[in-house]
Length: 318
Image (cartoon, rainbow, N blue to C red; front, side, top):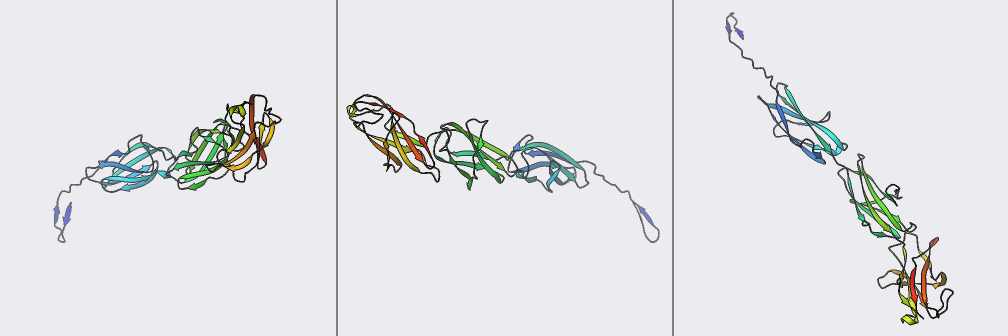
């Protein structure tokens, strides 16, 4: 370096310039390479430099998330804005001279919602009108919840209607009154606003809504069994769908009409239909002098339709 005054005098001094060409070092601390992440995740790296680190930039793929200018070098990353799947994270440390170093790792974003059956229970018995209920746990907003049923997992049909929502509980009424009794599968599906989805499947047993409760199969009836008068009782399992009511219940013995049951209220408050069968009286399907089996069934007439209940076989003793 040369300095001159107005008189032309000079003074020369050596100038020592230090050029920083050494890049910083940067190492990931969290998350771990290959980790599964969800929700808000803290990104953290350790960065050092021979002179000093000016900043650390964080990237998800090619998108810059943010930066930190002092240790500890961290950033809070909201993963819910990213689709589920692999994402490459990059940390770029830069010093004051512009030297830079990078470190990358890969994580898997997993923010798919979860859904769980609340009602009915797996392998439970359902009849009449059932309130389907499923609980959803989601980090992102839920787009929709759908319910399906079918006799096999390959033949599921969507149950019509839009579920009602109360907090995390999604509910939909399911009319199984006209579904043939048997084993079926129920599936609940949740889809969030990012398109991520999950499902839960359970088997259920669909039964008849109308059941011949009394007498029981194998009972002995008649004067010889000290049971000359039998209360043939038909009950309703569960509840009936909205707008459906029972108009009449006819009782049959050995396939012949014996009479019409009267509506009564059982001790538990439920609705039952009772026919008082006097076994001593002759009927088209019943000879009171002849012992043997009698098959009792009921025909239930409800709004617009009718159906037979299960049959009960009893032993008549004159």
